[in-house]
Amino acid sequence: MKRSVRTTLVYALISALAVIPAAWSLTGLIGWAMAFKLSLWADLFFYAVLLTRWSGNGLSAMGFPMALLLGTALWPGVYSGFFFLGLGVFSWIRSGICFTGTPVRAVAAEIITVAGGAGLVALLGPASTLTWAIGIWLFFLVQALYFFIIPSKDPSHTDRSVEDPFELARREAQRVLDQAG
Image 1 (tube, rainbow, N blue to C red):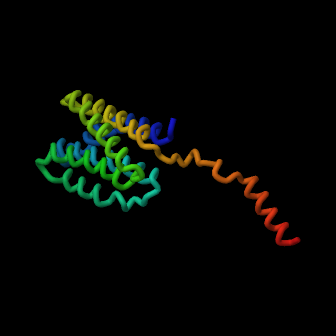
Image 2 (cartoon, rainbow, N blue to C red; image 1 turned 90 degrees about the vertical axis):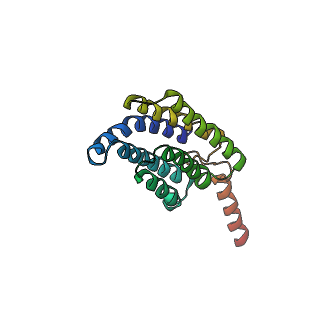
Image 3 (cartoon, helix red, strand yellow; image 1 turned 180 degrees about the vertical axis):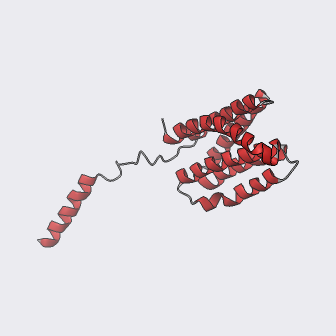
């Protein structure tokens, strides 16, 4: 299993278990709706950090999209707009900033995973904290499919067949011997 898929699956479980308690802890200060939006924003922020790390980009690349989404999270009375913009920012960071190698496949992967994840959450119809946690878990489970559709370079499995170290050493030794003789 690819590292990105495995990490996304673990992140799905952590998100499902952490977002609701995080929102509960902020509810007394700023109200449930704002606390829930900020908890979802933080969840997306940490996943965006993972995505930018995997792609080798700097964290500054995700700054503007996340700031835009934070502004929407802090705007009172904006709920469905926050969720739709969150899906857009998620796609923007993943396919527009992080994994840009295959544009047609990236669009197809985004449509399948984001629409599929959001569709599952909508079918679940989260109305309680438990169903929201299950919805968050389902959404990130579907996001793991992205890494099956889009081939990613897994840094833990570098391609060693490109240059055999013994062949490189042999050629270097041959070059030194040719220069000396």
